[in-house]
Amino acid sequence: MIPIIAPSLLAADFARLKEEIAAVEEGGAEWLHLDIMDGLFVPNLTFGPGVVAALRPHSRLVFDVHLMLSRPENFISEFAAAGADWISVHVEACHHIHRVVQQIRAAGCRPAVALNPATSLSALEYILQDVDMVLLMTVNPGFGGQEFIPGVIPKIRALADLKRRLKLNFLLEVDGGITPAIAGEVLGAGAEVLVAGSAVFGAPDRARAIAALKAAGSSMA
Image 1 (cartoon, rainbow, N blue to C red):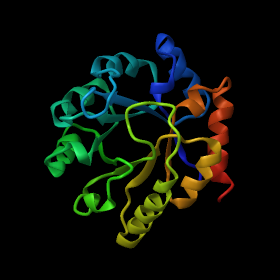
Image 2: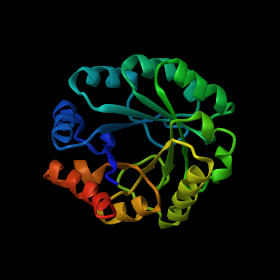
Image 3: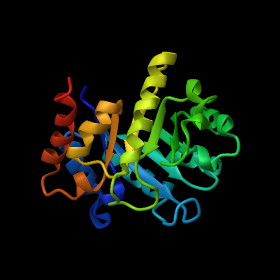
Image 4: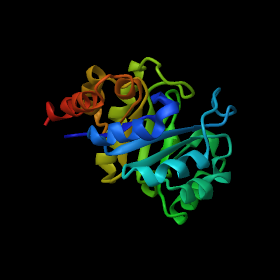
């Protein structure tokens, strides 16, 4: 299968965001992954809904907003109004995950839940039927440019098997350290959406970098 490619804006040149987004859109990406960090849930700060709103008129890409926030429920409406298409929240950050998922859908966005590398899939047991995507972190969230954690591969495979067994339709997204070499492994395990930061925005030819990630999927067809 050909994966959906979601370049992570975290790795872009922040002085040229409009041009950077245009380059990956023209290069064949379907989504744009926007990492929102608060310095509490993760040890880093990025940007807020104002930046998302400023970029929205300049791109037709699907905006995949990943909230790495300690209280994501306080910001759902703001990011929805800013132009998010998808909103991901971390199970680890939500006291009432069902309520937050319902809040995302009510705001007009598609809900996703995210898991850190060491969080068990059992945390998803009673929410899988209510979400449109599951995001498995393949690095510890907070910083771009980290190395992929190989131990997450069995977790991806287990979630893909669970999806088939329960006959569910959520997308399976992976984020962290994704390169063309690693893409084949995660796609083989069942991933469908690849978040790639440095592998795309760090490449001199964005179209070629995106094509290389897609080729990892086409070679498995």
